Length: 290
Ligand code: SIN
Ligand code: MN
Image (cartoon, rainbow, N blue to C red):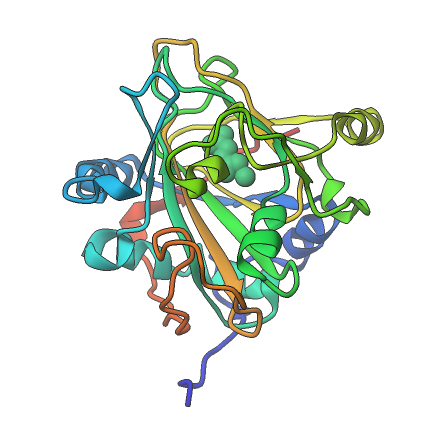
C-alpha cells in the first residue's frame, strides 16, 4: 500500500500553476519559476565526484577516451542526491505533470567539459526508453538542474518546442559506425547515438516551431517531455557545462524489458515521498527561454 499522498497543494507556492501545466502540455518544456540557490548548487558539486568514485563502469567517456562525458546512477547511495530527487520542486512538479505518482527512472550528470564536451545529435529520449526498455507509453519527463551557468557559449541544449506532439517514428536507428565494447555506450554517445531524429523531420519541425536554447544561471530547473526533440552542440568554450538530469516515470508506466544496466534503468520502482526543501535553498528564477 502506498501512503496517501497529496498530488497538488493549491496553497504551496512552490507547486506548478495551471498555466505552468498548460505550457508544459503545449510546448513540451517548462522553466520552473523557482531555482536552486548557489549554496545548494555548491553542495551538489561537492558531492559530484562520489557519482564516479568506484563506479567507473557507469561513467561514459568522450570519444577522446580521456574526458568523462557523463556519470550515471549512484543517487541512491548518496544522501544529498537521494534527497534532491525527492524535493517537492522536482518530484511534486513531476507528479503534477504526470498526473500520477512517480519514481526515478534515470539519474545522470552530463559534464560537457570545457574544450572537450562533445555534441548530442537530435533525438527524442522516449525512442531509447521504448525501444530498449519497453516503456509502454511516454508518460515520463526529465528535470534538468543546471550545475553551471549555461550560456550560448558552453553547449546549451536546443529544443524544438511542441515537437513532443509531432507524430514521429520511434527513432531512426543510426548506422553503427564501430560497435563500442559495451552497447549501452551508444545510448549516451555523440556521433554514434543509437536513435536519432530524421534530419528532414528536424528541419520541418524547426521551420514551424523554431528552436529554443536553454540558457540560464546555476540552479535553473527545466522540465522537458520524453518526446521533445532536442540536441546540443559541442562545448568549445573554456567553461564547463554540467547539467544534472532526473527522469521521473509514472509508477503505472514501468519498463517491461530490463536488459540495460540498473544505472541506466533504475530497478527500484517504488514511488518516493516528497521532501520540502529548506527555504534558503530555493529562490525565484528569472525568465530566459523566450
Ligand atoms: C540528453 O539529451 O540526454 C542530454 C543532452 C545534453 O546534455 O546536452
Ligand atoms: Mn536526451
